[in-house]
Length: 437
Image 1 (spheres, rainbow, N blue to C red):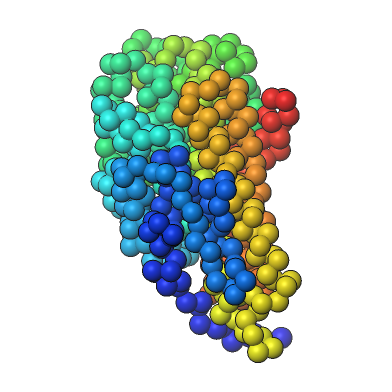
Image 2 (image 1 turned 45 degrees about the vertical axis):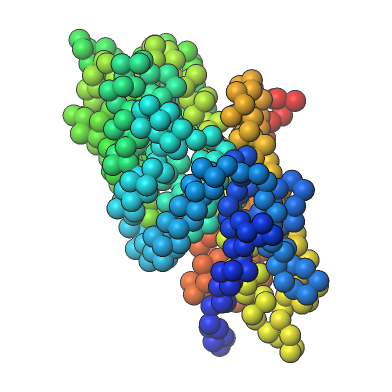
């Protein structure tokens, strides 16, 4: 079979056209109760939808504060300048972009939803998720790393003592450190009650023994949240310990060889009597499951935001390509089969963003934990399924070119599959949703 010649990449949308909406707001700018980076408010049209003449319709924006607008503009600038030009190369070499995360940290993006008093950004979770979506559209690995680090601060920020927060949080939120969460184990994934890693009190330390699996940032993190068993069986025996990377007895295994997001290391963490100071116990003994529950809700929202960003990127690329690719004397986007496919993709991205926004507002409003859990599960389920559909359709829209590395859609499709699995499989999300009804 003769391999088709690779066409020039589709031209980037004109900056003025793509980034200026009817009120002069950027394409990715969002309100304080915000839209995601590529879509629409609940009553608006998508920025990727095509009008009668094949032109893109600018997305109307909800109201936003100047402070949020400045944050989103900063995220856009950093994503365009620092992330987009490097993503393909780093992914091809499976190299972790540690310095880029330091750059984002210095810009204040690694602690957005935490109190200013401890070095955080004091932003709503909705604003933070909008930033994640902006980053994910350019490079999923970096958005995921920001999400992982923000989650690694949650246990201490929400459940630590005032002394622990004052002593440890400023360093964790300051932009230089990177954190990781150690929850899953080889024989305990979705069933957190089956965790087998133990922590035994030994004087002014805990001796922690066990193996943690699928740990993102393993080998790169400066500290690890260890969910382990300090009591009896079941969830009431779980606790959380915060361990420095240099803790004696803590080591990192061989990184997993993943199908996507290869620049982000995922590896087992081996705990061989790791000695963690007793004053690093977060909350009371036995509070680990409560902490993990809040962590799961926020983690699912973060993954949903990453999924919306990834799907939006794929939609953008497919729209640009099908308008530049000509067959039978006209752009292939003019053919109804592709036009309707693009319309469906745009609708799915907008719907995923709306679910994400609803769940974020639920969390920000301090609604009942059970409602937040269900809303986060719905957002994660729908957004990641959408990312899988949209990236797959983007590959199809590009035809043979979608299957080669000259275009990023094949990588995005591989990455989308991971999003359906991490932070709780989508089957688990359906169980959570069904139980809430």
